[in-house]
Length: 145
Image (spheres, rainbow, N blue to C red):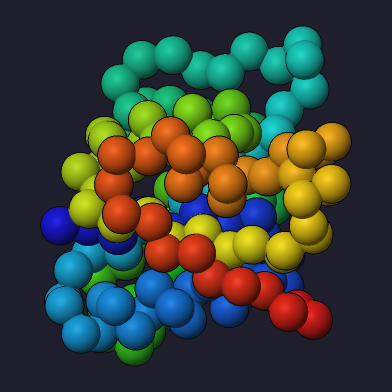
């Protein structure tokens, strides 16, 4: 089993990573830290095998790549098996597709808990993951992060 941790690269990401760290320390599983880049409508996401796509996206978005790699390095420095994954095509479906490719057994996401009205008007990423995922989902509440 692998753990897929979806992060938005906000300060809240560290809270989500810490929850995944606890599971990884107990189980010894590999942790994939995933950030899906939201691209402009005219940006064409690279095609090909998953590794080729990831390398292409990393070259196109070096700042995001550096930030997600830094999060993975924190776990690696503590002796955990972790990797950074940067993909384009932000959204629930992209995350779930990557979870399948990476053979994840658990998805970890954060929620800011904006409330029902916000979720209806704007949509909730974590709620979408919960609704559509066939995998267990650990939802980490984010408060004042």
